Amino acid sequence: MEHWQCTLLYSLIVVFFLRSLFALFFSGKPNKRLPPGPFTVPLIENVPWLRRTFRLEPILRDLKSKYGPLITLRPGARPEIFIANHSLAHQALVQNGAVFSDRPVSAPVIRLLSSNQRNISSAAYGPTWRLLRRNLTSEILHPSRVKAYSNARQWVLGVLVRKLVNDGSESGVKVIDHFQYAMFCLLVLMCFGDKLEEQQIRQIEEIQRKIILSFSRFSILNSWPASIGKILFRNRWKELEELARDRENTLAPFIKARIEAKQRDEVLAYVDTLIKLELPEEKRKLSYGEMATLCWEFLNVGTDSTSTALQWIMANLVKHPSIQAKLYEEIVGVSGTPPEGVKEEDLQRMPYLKAVVLEGLRRHPPAHFLQPHTVTEEVELEGYVIPKNSVIHFTVADLGWDPGVWEDPMEFKPERFLSGREAFDISGNREIKMMPFGAGRRICPGLALSLLHLEYFVANLVWVFEWKGVEGDDVDLSEKQVFTTVMKHPLRAHLYPRNQPGNSAD
Image 1: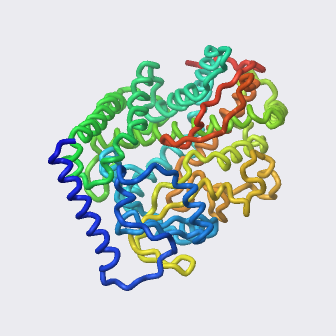
Image 2: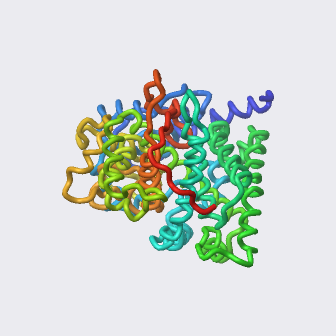
Image 3: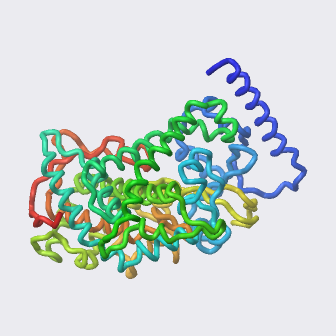
């Protein structure tokens, strides 16, 4: 960094620090009863080179034991509040859903990659968000539409099985790469309506992975207003803008091809629905860049979270052969040995399969925190004031690991989901015991589709193969954070064929 940049940088640190202190202590506003928390110096936590690397979750657990399940931290002038309790999460997300359903203004990197928050996950709670979400849920994720893609799932299963078979080695198959590619094939087909060539799919996948793996490199840009960051970190901003252009240039030809196609399959594609949309607050159609953003969101969320969850589930089935054996017994008892593999209509009659999938999501949620929420007005929660525009975080993993709710929470025990008289409510509408998909108005719209994909692929992978660990290599369930929380040491397994599904149509 040049000398003038260093001087400007340190001057800005001092200015922001003093401004934050003034806002914190001398604003003249009444001292409202915020949730408790430790004293922190504003701004310091937001400057990467002034803070040591730390893991937030163990720190929050220590703070929870001292302050309780509502904790206030102050990374700047605006407080950030963490909710680490089932009933409080339900009060906020379900009972007070309208107040807690907004999103904070995104950091500069996210604003650029989300077309200024014009996607479902980051859009403010309002007309644009309602339009985008309603379009996805009513058009693509409607049960009749999901059923129409059953042939696509069968085709992708064939692709996945062939790649797993062809990748056998003494060191075992590294399954995550094949899981990600298979899920990506399926989502690409649902997005653009065509079975693209592998080279085309890899091209889209490459830019997707490049952006995901670059997030940490660009995190420093989020510590400053964009106008200042573009001066201090000019080259890195140019690199980020080039990545965003590459994404649009990669996806736009597939969008245009779908728009211009004279003949289309009967099955609706996501792009088909985006063409018709008009932004309600701007009274205009979506640009190609905005459609590319929404397609990227669709591909990214649907691929990464599902492939991550699938790997965690299969890792536990390798680690616990008795659970795998019990699951296989149920699958064969319901489906037998049909030539095409386990049928989707049979999944509803497999309670142990559902229990295995739910236990995988409880024990290893792909995201350990929900995306940040913010409140649209001042609200009281558990006797404390939550100020308007406060940023709210919900601890997903810790809710699923709470020993007060779950017996032996760190053990993988699918049977825990078979003991209740009623089906487990993963949506959290009645109560929240775990929420890997969130809860309330901002719950993941793809919840039902994700569960279907996990049940379908887990059932068929166990039906086709017996999964065993690599000799001398115990399955390591350690975690690391990438875009989702993944296995630190990806699963390797030996796969022994039990049944062979027939070739699906290519």
